[in-house]
Amino acid sequence: MSLSSEDTTEIRGLLYRDRQTKVALRFLKRINVSLEAIRRNLARAEEALADEPLSSNVRLLAGKFLLAEEDIPLEDLGILTKTPNLASIIILNYNTLKITSDCIKSVLALTEYPAEMIVVDNGSTDGSVAWLKKQNYLTLISNKNNRGWTAANNQGIRVSKGAYCLLLNSDTIVRTRGWLKAMIRLAQPPDVATVGAKLLYQDGTIQHIGGSIHDVNPFHPFDGAPADIPESLKVREVPFNTGACLLIKKSVIERVGLLDEKYVFGYGDVDYGLRCLEAGFRNLYCPSSILTHLWAYTQRKTGKWIPSESFARYKQKWTDKTPALSKKVDMDFRWPDSAQYIRRTGPGSHIATIRKKESAMTWGALNENQ
Image 1 (cartoon, one colour):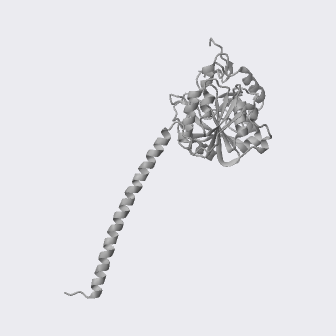
Image 2: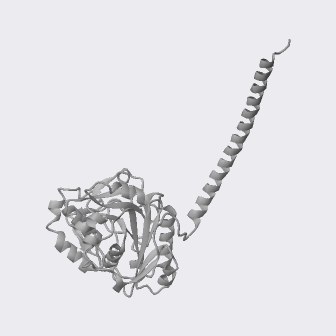
Image 3: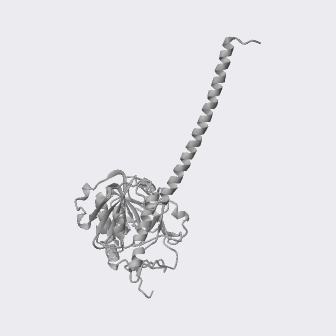
């Protein structure tokens, strides 16, 4: 059978298209292999970046500058900088170089929200300042003396640029990627003032899942309980969040004010949560943001514990107000059932000493012999 010229042309066209298709398929296969290689390389690079202890480009935005305490502006709060979609992570340091560097490393590795980092050094003498000066991704405020928790954090807030301030203890280690983004997501409603994280002890048990208050006495519900109990897995409203990891919206600070510096150490975080409630705001607990909290590291290292003056000020300020505030939020969430519940915070300091006697709960002072 003979083929016409038209048939021959059509067959040639089919063969050519078939050959081109095979070439195209081989090319696409090579591209796919290349893409897989790129993905593997990116994954390896991300792993290396997470392992890098002090990288300066892990989604953190900040130019390095140094400030002395006398350089901190004291202008009216109404002109605080509020850069949208930027968080200001404020870390305090006082002679805790090793744990501060571990804290910073965890923040750099697991933060997935645009942020600046501000470290306030409270007069360290352990070489902290020299090391911090070399970290070109952070803002360092260097105090001559220990200004305490509230005043030092206020310094960081005053120079911060973000719309959110995240107060972070140096004895914390971030454990979950996206921890900050999750907290900021919960903070979006206009009536939310603060958001707190889930803090665990080194053994993995609960240290903080939002604070509670019995009468006027603050405590940590489920302290020492397993980390996966149902109560720890739900977002809920709380009277206060611990200052060890505390997100505060800058717009709230403009209305409620800065931290009360009369609490040099202790109860400043509880006070701030209650002030927010009093102003009509809510405080939320975020269960998906998880950190390890070494708990009272500086106090145990220095031997300086919460002064009784701080508790006296707190009690004087809030004893008559907490009944009204309890109508806004469940203050007494899961009061411990044990006959006696003590979290030792140091010789002579005020602690929650709970004795179950006809439902009467007392606040006691722990002496060195107790």
